[in-house]
Length: 143
View 1 (cartoon, rainbow, N blue to C red):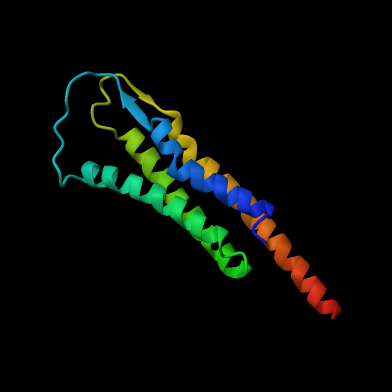
View 2: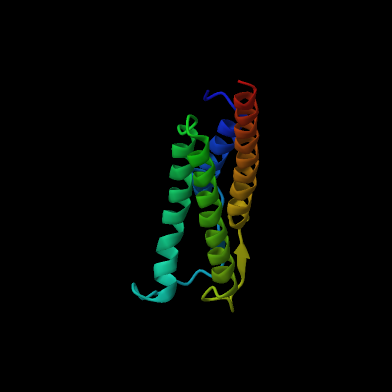
């Protein structure tokens, strides 16, 4: 039963995490100078982790769509996606507060709120999964 509402929520989460990060900026520095960043510095490593976490969230949401026969595992995947997005949100807030070159004018992009939207849709999907699980349990009691 892939035509359930949680499939739509999981698909929206996958699109938000996998596609919209290329559409919306996370932050943008208006200063035109080129910043030289050490490849092994803390900021460079965290900047490499952010796209990986977005793609992990999108991939897990796509995998969770096809776990419709195992609702408990689908619910667990939802919780894992929520944890990934919460960590990602914390990382983005930390980087936006400690962004190098902050003495110059910089803008925080709307892409910083993408993990919040992903969390919202996963919570709605988990609520629908829980509702389906309760419905199946109530029907099994009647047998």
